[in-house]
Length: 448
Image 1: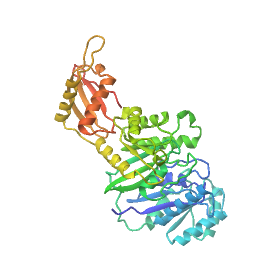
Image 2 (image 1 turned 135 degrees about the vertical axis):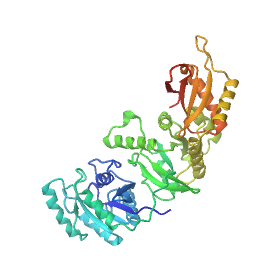
Image 3 (image 1 turned 180 degrees about the vertical axis):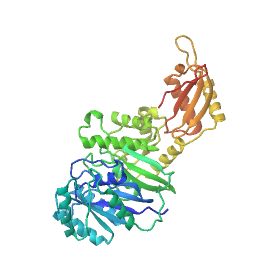
Image 4 (image 1 turned 90 degrees about the horizontal axis):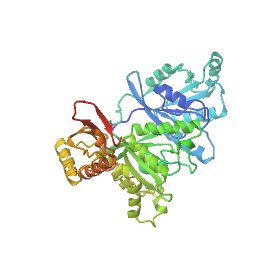
């Protein structure tokens, strides 16, 4: 599959690269705060302008020569984006003026021998716009003077990008790619797991919790099936989310769940399943994602029998319904194939359509095996007819005598029967109950 042309946004920290990224896309994708070093991983999204499509890449701030480990990882990510790019946008700051770091970054880009467009950002007023011309000294031509904050000069930049793009020959990523959100508490190994799966240092890894801030998409092919891995920020309890950056990171993670097919919930093997792990898994389940559990750092807890882990998982995450489980070690690249096999099975279960005949026969057998309990007035639920109305996740419409008689316990029982009959492990099942009485109104009950 041919790729789209790639346009990388680079520059030193805090020049407004993420703000420009959002403005070029005409939507807020990257987190923007007045903090240097906020962006660390490469963010990618498809940008459209003048009947052309290209992949736009936001990068962390380049600090040439820094020996600080996290800064060095961010720099390597930016350098990799430069190596893969067809066009580069070098962003500089009109408010700060020309700096030695700008000169070092410009020198690095000249050696890349690729089209470089100089973008002088933060030109929010006449004084800043007049200061932009000192950037001629970088030897990269006249700067495009813009304000990402106010949207000034953005069209001119996009026109210039389209003019130097290579001839159109690419294709957009396949629409049937399985989108997999990798979620969990901070520092359980989510980014390490993504890097192990793709076989490269695609996202920044650091022992300090909170390294990942944006939701980072990484296209990936496993056994011929296209996927998109979405690395996300760690989710803490709401009461502990105490900064603006962390708040927006959490929002990005929730949006990642909203567009994901499957959520891989990563837990720390030595710590076991915590209450927060349960909350995270439920959040993914309620978002309509299939759920797969990755017990990471398994190399540190091999003394525990896998059967015991399986029993604890099913007991604590029973609301998912036989959640698929993989024992992994991102550091040692172990358990990756079983994990991805479980992801694909769960994606297939979430997209499964059950014919009306077999569905009704399975429900009839469940009712024969265990009748619905009666309420305090002796009334008992009667299920007349069932049909699946949607997939992703499977949604089943039940015609019954009274939806209020559909109890939580009986829902779980019927779900267990259906999961066993139609291999629906790991996927939510949504129920819509409609009374056969005169009112046509339907309501959703049970699992979301």
